[in-house]
Length: 351
Image 1 (tube, rainbow, N blue to C red):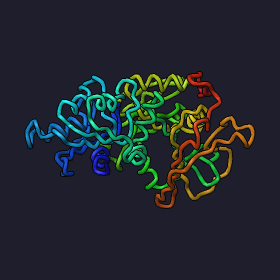
Image 2: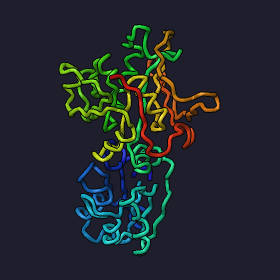
Image 3: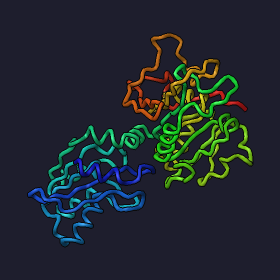
Image 4: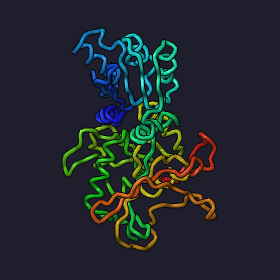
C-alpha cells in the first residue's frame, strides 16, 4: 500500500478526480505492474496498471493477481468505465484497498467485486491514505469544496499596522510556502477590500516564474476590480461573487468542478468562512514581531463567552525561516457554526 500511495501522490492534486495509485501483484507477491490516475479523462489507476501488464505479458497475465489500490475501485460510468468491472473481467482474484470511495455515484465497487467472487479487503493503510488525500475525501463527503483559510499575523495577532500596511509581516520562506500551497488548490479567493488595498496577483509563483498549475482567482464583494488591477492579468479568468451567501458561492464552484478553495482575502473574508463553519483547514503564518493597534488578523467570530471558543486541532508546526506555520483543522464537527446546513451565510463586505 505504501508504494500505491507513493504512485497516487505523483498524480495531479487538483481537479474533480482523486489521486489514486494501484500495484498489481502475482500470487507469489511479485510486482506485475503499476499505475496511477493522471487527471480527468485519463485511465484510472487500476486500468492503467492492467494496460501496462497486458502490454508486457499478455491479456491473461492478471488472472489470479492481487490489486492493491489506495481508493475503492469506482463503480460508475463517467469519462471512463467502472474499474470494478474492469478488474472482474481481467480475472483479478483479490483487491486490497485503503479507503471507501465516498461518492454517491462512484462508490460501491467493493460490493460489486465481492458479489463477483473477488476477495475484497478494505481498510489497509487507511490512516495514511486518509491523511494524504484528505482534501478530496472531505470535499466528496461534504458535497462542497475543501476550504483552506490562510492568514499571516504578528505574535500579538495583528495582520497590519494601524495605517493598513502589511507588506511584509512574514519573510520570504513563508511567502514561498504560500505560493506552493496556492498551486495545490483549484481556486484562490480574496475579498474586494484586499484586492483594492493590496493589488494582489493571486498567482502561484516561484520567484517571478509562474508555477505549472495556476489556481483560478475568485473575488468576493460588490465593488469592481479596477481595469488596471494586476489580477486582470491572471492566466485564468476571474470569477466574481457578491459574497453575501458563502455556501452558495461554494455550491457554484462545486458545480464547476472545483474541489479545493484557498482563502486568503483579509480579516473580513477569513472571519466569515470561520464563523460560518466552512473552514476545513487553517494555516496561520506567525511572524516574531509585535505591531499592536486595531488591525487584528480576525474579526468577530460570534464568540460571546469563552465556552463558545472555536477549538482547533494542530496537525503540524513548520519552521519557515524566522517564522512559524501552524497547520490546524476543526477539533470536532460542531466546532464552528451555529447555522443550520445550507443556511445563507452573510458577511459584511464593503460596497
